[in-house]
Image 1 (cartoon, rainbow, N blue to C red):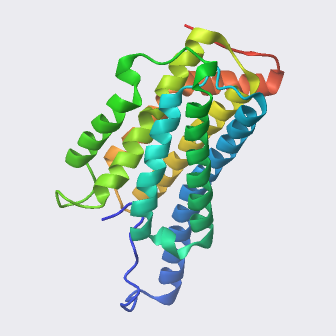
Image 2: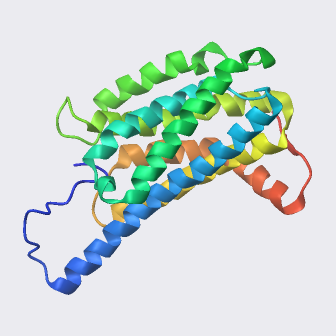
Length: 244
């Protein structure tokens, strides 16, 4: 099954009307939680893109993070067509806008690559983590067949779980995080926290996707200390100090 499976609309619903309406409402909540997570991500991407275009610089930013997020977005463009998301106009709009912004961010990272010399070490490069996530998704995905679109679902979740690591690595070595960059990363962490609620909602209705839940949970745990510092910065102001 898919984390957002297509409903068997061609079949009558054998449940009582009230039960069917309640189930439909719960399914709608799942979809909106899923979309909300990516909308938060989209807002963060817009903030970052505006900063890059204004400053003509990608200093302090990880190109590997943006390339991995672009790969995840392209993968999502494929498997979203096989889910209940196709029933929601907002999902189409979000996916189109997110894809355009992801492409623009990846291009900007390449265009202004000369403005930064700091990058993540080889084990955290996109050229290493993207193939690794794809192999992992091939063996561990929610489908029941070896070759299924669920591989792309798992790949998206796995690559998004590790995509922020190169950016966090760079920020730890820069000590003081630039203001807009801090907001971008904070919004990305929040978007994954929202998606954790999506997995919990699915679990509550009996659809268990433990591997994908663990991927988002791992992402949240790895960036948990940063999230705490970012929230504290929003409350008290000042610079965000994120160092070893």
